[in-house]
Length: 342
Ligand SMILES: Nc1ncnc2c1ncn2[C@@H]1O[C@H](COP(=O)(O)OP(=O)(O)O)[C@@H](O)[C@H]1O
Ligand SMILES: [Mg+2]
Image (cartoon, rainbow, N blue to C red):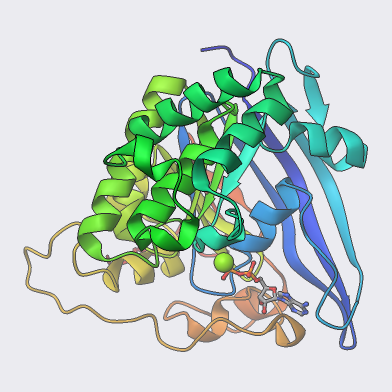
């Protein structure tokens, strides 16, 4: 493993130009992911996780009524030997982005049909991506596609090569999408809620599969989820997002055992299965809900839902993301003085 991270995101901003004005769906988000490591991006629905993922792929489109989007900051991707070297994705040409997508960085979504084309056979789609990105001949690409279907544990892969996506079960389609995403051995895989639509047993199998492939291929993984149970299984590092910003970032053990932001502690309290509840305390959801971007409260965006909020310090200015312990950053004006209960 080298010292250079595969992905180095610096002050990423995604600003939506809407009828209600300019809204920062992602605001000064920074993190790195090294080869073979997993960063989980976690937070409730509307936190800005998908906007972050799509921005890294340069796939943030226009809004529903054609409103524009502006991306800011820097996204450095180490594309590895034989590719373009170290590339700043937000400044890359669209042609370079197209060459990099699928090859140096790839993405899997909650809904596999976002990636799989319904009118082509599964094996053909994977082989086609390999031909396009790696310049292999067709029969070599087909052999690689078959290997990938084997690798992701699809039974009878020879037959499944010839299946159309709708002929596969949800779990098998998800595996096929992962096979396609990993077929060109990307340096970075972005997975946005890849197992949220699956039932628990299949979810566990697909997560185990992703971990195994990541280890074998040394992929850097950005794993997006709202589910802390999944974070516990997958992540090395965790970044908790709230209203477009990172509010807490730490190693997975530290975050679970010594959370410092009241939002993180609230998410942990709302997860029954994560760390066990030896004291018999009840599972409780975080009260209130994620604010709309157009109606973000002044000060700390979380303060209306926070049991520790104080008028003035918490309601007037946004606290900075500050290091609370080595490798552990928190965005809370009261981080040094409160004990958050888990
Ligand atoms: N076209 C749009 N106009 C206004 N707000 C939008 C638009 N698209 C997304 N948003 C808002 O951006 C925020 C982040 O959304 P998203 O990244 O999808 O969240 P997550 O993936 O964490 O659930 C949400 O508040 C969402 O409502
Ligand atoms: Mg999302």
